[in-house]
Amino acid sequence: MENINNQNSGQPLDKGQENKQNNNKHTWRWVWRTALAVIGLALAFCVGTWLYDLMRWYQYESVSANVEIQQRDWPEGMRVYNTKTGKVTVKQISFCYSDDEAPLVRYRSSRKSKGIGYFFRETGEPAIAPEYELGWDVSEGIVAVVDHNKMLHFFTTDGSPLHTKTFRQNENVDDVKYLGGHCAVCDTTGLWGLIDTLGDWVIQPQYTKIEAEMTCYDEEWRGAWRLKSPTGELIANSDAHIILTCDHDSKIIFDSDETIIVTHKNRPSTVYDMEGKLLYKKAYYTVQQLFFESEEDDEYISSAQGTAANALKYILWDGRCGLMDLNGHPLTEALYSEIRMLGLNLFSATIYGSSAEVVLDSRGRVVE
Image 1 (tube, rainbow, N blue to C red):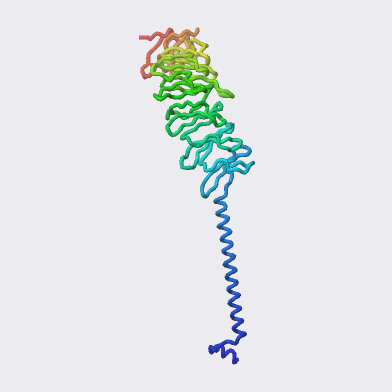
Image 2: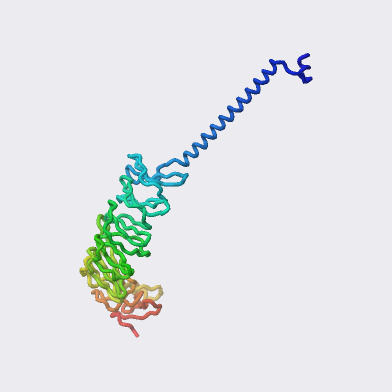
């Protein structure tokens, strides 16, 4: 009771009590320090794991058995990595694209130049330096690229130049490629021609546009070239030989069965093969049998329902139509957009490009 009174009265503690109090303070300090250390380690682990996930490289896309595109989130970036050798082959890229069969893969560098380049699909090693503004996929073992001066260059799939000649890029063209050993390019004046793999002109640059027309593209291209000029169109075959010439009144259609249809204004079309040989002198888009049909309730009219006309309607590729007899001989030019049967020997014909109608007899003559 006396000791308690001494403590409450503020008298000094004896040595044993003081040591016990100090030990309690040290214990609590140790507990707090340990807790803070554990919390710090946990935070450091969480932050470290988060940073590791941000900074680690992971597979974004596989381009071959041994090569993949890797990506990381921070600092943001992509690279080309060879999983067999463990080597980073191309650093700092922003995208890559190529079809699965091409030996070269196209990519854009994320460096200051942001140029287009290519690397080898099987090894990931650089093939063409990223020094170009545009580039296209491999075609017939050749890639086309455009430098910053808007000039075309060509490379083979081993990364070496196809030839040393350069040509002007036409900005209205979405794709530049060799087809059948030839490529459509412009000269310095903007006129189009065809070059071979040596860079020599095989069709001189004198056309306003040249387009490739594909009818089949299995292992090798089979098609033709459409050459446009102020006076009309010409067709060159896959060997770059001119096979057809057409004026502005004609239209050229490449059919899926590897034929060329040349339509003519108001008359039947002609059909050629891909070498320009005439197959059919007169050809139609379709020929239809006409039948008498009416919604009027009349005894005479009802008895004529479903009667076939003694003439046929032929239709051309541009939608124009005309009459022909049952032997296939045209009775009229293709001047109409629609023809229907009015009676056994009469037809109503709508003039093409107009709403006006005329009446034709069974010989195609206009009835006044």
